[in-house]
Image (cartoon, rainbow, N blue to C red):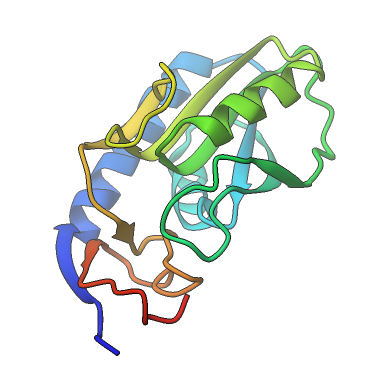
Length: 181
């Protein structure tokens, strides 16, 4: 069994600077407006916690849980909601906070589901906007970092529930079929 190699992609300092800038931008865009941040579990919890602390406006917080990867390194193509929305978002702006916008299938499904709650608007904020496997035309309205390719871990991103705890973002290399998932 080989040990996956972690190659640095984004440092903790780079991430924190960009999250601070993004917090200011979102605050300016939604000042005086009712805003609900909807974090997609599990991956977005680190990014969302940092982002909320950088906002200069009051917001409501909600979490939703989906699954499209399971323990694999590629999306199954089927998105399942594992946790329903518990906050009333009618007539409020909804901002989906995601760790990584990859294929776009999860966000597409979430936008469709959230529309039934009749929010004023639905927008997407992603830490990583990765286009390598994008299946649809979705783009993040707010993105910290555009990334072309690679399987990334750290800062909430995982591989088989590992590496979320890392404070920076790494590309994971040397994956083999024998690696535990």
